[in-house]
Length: 519
Image 1 (cartoon, rainbow, N blue to C red):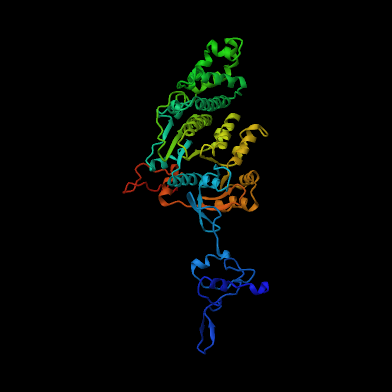
Image 2 (image 1 turned 60 degrees about the vertical axis):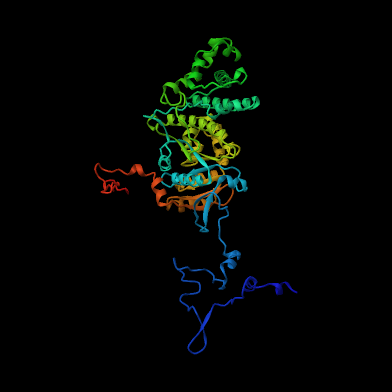
């Protein structure tokens, strides 16, 4: 039998699953007995050749068939769905397929869709960055994933915490909260249950993170620490921590303790570091000693130089460290605070229960990156360890230029910061100006269509974004918020100014005609 004779029509294929159906549209009889078409001609077969009238350059080739939905759904040309699995947080819908769009970075990694679970969001103010992030956090809570906001610079996440009945940790003016940047966290609680080998490994990791933090803080003040500085800090921390006596106990330490020992070293300290004398030790380490002194008496005095006086409820669905009260102390103070919080939160979440996932949000990450090379390296290290430590790192920024302006052109800081984007497999690109979109296209290798989406389509409505997942074609996603979510996520609330005494009879805030913003 020839191949042509073996071919069957779509109607014959459908007949296999049920009664045979006609491939002709149903007809009717005219008064004269002749058959007539059910649908009379009302327009040219290709439509009207003008905008908005559905004109097609070719005639429609499809015929009309009748079948049940469970049968017709198997025809490939009629299917349109998202290529990503429906698991995790339901964010909105794909404007191409009309199907729901789900996001679960860890599931994407497990299904080989991407190589790491980290996200980065770019977008101009007012395009929906914060609402997209908060919607993701809120909906991931339904899957049992908790969140830590590692430094809420503008207080944008505080309304969400209040709605969930969680009190944020406020740092800054008028708050009594203190956070020890060298806090042992869960390390001290689990110390006695570990073997000596495990204790040694954990101490080495903690000391490495603390040394990196202290040199980053010194570098933020214009001093580039040397290898000798790092060795001295490591020796001081070991001596203060009490690990030189056989790992039998751990002593809590603070930044003032480190500064005190650097200013007044004992003979064992400077001799173990091979200095010729006490004076040589003091002269060589004077710069880094003064840099640490500025943390004790400078703009951040009283915030990170005393013992932690609050308890973090890690069983809560979300925790936030609010830095909005620090904005009056300057950008550098905020950036230093973000660096301290980043180091503290990393230690606090490293020893979480096995199998527990946690989202760590790093808002306005560009502030921390501009502190210097060590600060950039700290963020790079956290992103590289996200899979091993079961974390989903979320970086929020305005534009890729924020990553490329952390140092001089061609410097090591810029090279590492540029690689940070490669460590974020999921890139969410909200509306941007033409100039910024060109930067995005260059850094993320966007096609012309993808670049046009960020400058045109994404700017037409809040919450629209091009979701670029590694090397896959970008997806046009519209984030959908409920009425209650819009009230919680409103980052323009500070623009609503109400005159004194101008309130509605029901107690709600009314509209102020003088400023022209919505109530």
